[in-house]
Image 1 (cartoon, one colour):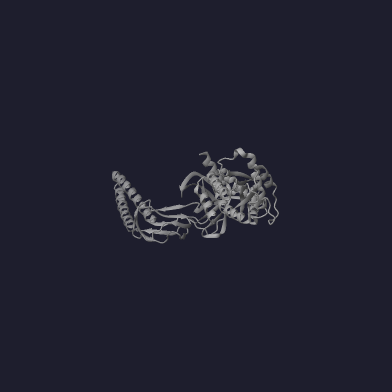
Image 2 (cartoon, helix red, strand yellow):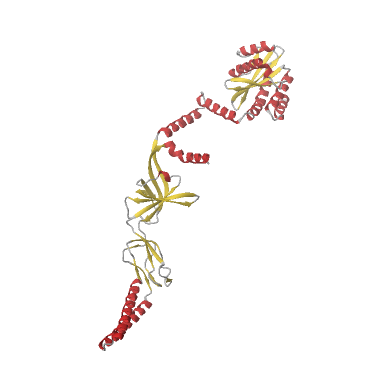
Length: 449
């Protein structure tokens, strides 16, 4: 147990892979009396020697390194520790590469120990001893335990020092090996599904629609204003009520208007009497003056009667009141020109669509679409694009263009101010483009900037 702990401590003592591997292999070789200890890792299908005991570099022994790598490949192919020379009580193993290595290095005994990390073979450690038949069963078991614990540590250090590009390629290669190998059924299923999805997204087409928030408005919206100054005496309707043309919306206090009408009526009667008297006396100058005053009184009387009629505010058209509630303002003063009500017809609507500026290039007039309102989520109302407003509006951190559309049908259940979602039909596009065009457009703009 103590040799294992000491070798683990040696592996963890150094931060860099080469220093750690050299120290571990040197300690390994010294403790077991080996002439040489080598460490190699798989690269593709073959193992390459990465560190040798008692040496900071092994490039000068390239031929020997190839022989050691071949011996490591032989052990990894058999997925077992390989000992040369073969022992009678052991299973039959291929020893061709080990025999060649012994011939070249003049070693009496060779032991190669595979390194397993995360369930896969990543490399091997080869020990070369000058004495023949020195690796007994206990020594092999101890060496296997050390390799099983120290090997993953050295492999982690080795992988961490590789470049990012190489690590990415290694990960991709491992994934591909798992995908096309005999195992990893779940990975193969995922790969098949991903391939099928890629084919569908690349070649299949679908209807592309631009989705936007929508608001229902009346095509014509009439404003009812206060025609004269006065005070609100009665209010019979408010926002949401349906009215017919000519209905009395509200009534202004007409007491002062009636008094003014009576005054000018009396004034007119008096002037008419004086005018007839002057006319009978043939006083031409007086007749001219009284005629002018009589015309003025007549005009004032007509204006008073008109203002009195205007105190009764009537609905200019049939529809629904979309704004205005005077029921809580009885007795309040109003001035001429104040907006009292807004009325929209019930038989003519327009759909106001807020289209994101990234999609406005897809919109043209006469395109068709469907409207779904929050109040009637199961209903769909067809519409046709009639106008694209060339002015953007900023809202919620984005820019929008207002697109107007006309409903093909006008059900009685609709009301101005309803909100929902509109989808404008653009045409057929590839499914992959439909799902990724927003991201690709953003990437192109980002790369350009």
